[in-house]
Amino acid sequence: MATIDTLTILDGYVQGRSFILQKLAGYAVEGKYSAEGLALFARLIDSKGEVLVVKIDNERQVRLIVEQSIQLRKELLELAGELEA
Image (cartoon, helix red, strand yellow):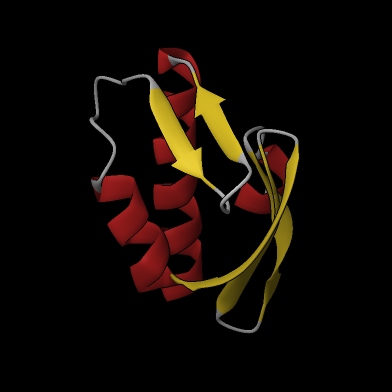
């Protein structure tokens, strides 16, 4: 099964060598990320998990609990690996 089919925190699609992000934890966002960008984002998240607040814009932010931040890190790394392959 492709990584894209197992995502629970991220929602989007692969276009060429980029991931087009449409939702983060159910919140609408827009972004285009390379494998390097996804891996960099993943490295910012503690592997043991942490409460994480991601600022979307001046008015919106997404708050993830520890378990969600662990899952987000996993999904980012898996997508990065898939894009590099």
